[in-house]
Image 1 (cartoon, rainbow, N blue to C red):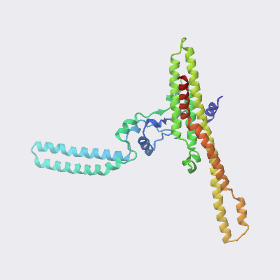
Image 2 (image 1 turned 180 degrees about the horizontal axis):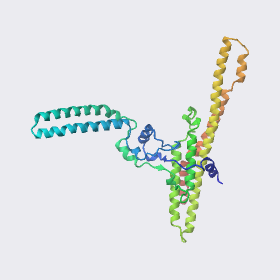
Image 3 (image 1 turned 90 degrees about the vertical axis):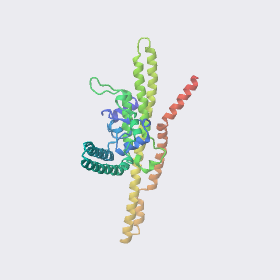
Image 4 (image 1 turned 120 degrees about the vertical axis):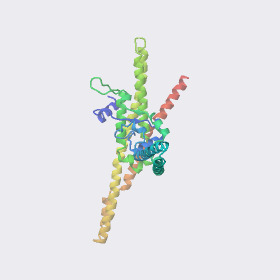
Amino acid sequence: MSEWKSLWKRECGKTAPIYRVLVPESVNEDIMRAWTARGYRYTAGAPSAIMLTGGMSRNLFRSSVVFKGGTAAGTAVTAGFAAPGGLALLSGFGEAAMTFGGMGAVTALGTGIFAAVTGPRYLRDPKRLSRKNRSKVAGARWITPASLGWVPGRREGRDTDEQRLFHLAVTIARKIVRTRAWTHPVLRDHVSRVDLDHAVASIGVRLEELVNLREEIEGIRDAGTAKSVETYLSKLAVAFSSMAHRVESMHEYYERLTELDQQLVLLANSERSRELGDRVLDVLSRTAADDSADWQFRELRIDAESQSSVISGLLDELDQTADDFDDFDTRLAEARRSVDELEA
């Protein structure tokens, strides 16, 4: 059994594929910021995506309801006074028309003041999508089990290697974001941190292409094209192997992060041990004045500097692992250019 299949069987072979991963390039930064402000889970490492495809293109939040609902209600009340006032004026009841007109003017003024107060708050709301962005949300691209050929069910259900591989990639991504090192300052600005959303989404896009292309190739299989079909499928297998190697590199990156986690815990404990030792020495100096306590505590402490050097070494290893994983697209493009030059 290949390495990726062993990983899939161990990590997620007994769980149903539940994911919905956004392709970041399919929407702009403003849309993603608004979704983040709303609390939507759409990133590769999210536990599971919120299935709100319809709601994602609408401004369904408090400031929108207050502003739109309030102004609509005020407009309706104003119209309710204006209609009787107009009928009274046409019927010759001038006094009644003035009464209804005055009440309408008051409600119109109140509606205007309400809109002036709540409007800017709504327009500045970080959750708000502009009209232009609302139209663009429909073009958002999502990687789902169904798009990779998965059909639920025992009898008529089916699965594909592409879906299994991407399920593994999503599972690894969810584990990566749960590590201590992923959110620790030591990795915040370090070169070994990869763009996880882009990396996982690009794997999904490639696998979708493989699934769709394989189905098209299988659709033309007959006695005359059988040889060509087998050749095409063998080429697709090579492309799939490249994707599998990338996911395996992603798992190796996760293992490096777990090693870094352990060292970060040791470093935190050593620093805590040093603080406690200083406090104990301070207590002794003010009570027993034990001259031998100082060197005894120094012998017992965990050496924080040694942990820091280990962490530096792990970060160097992470750099290499991240390069192997994150530079896949660049290396693939270079390989394609080389092939095109040889064919030319």
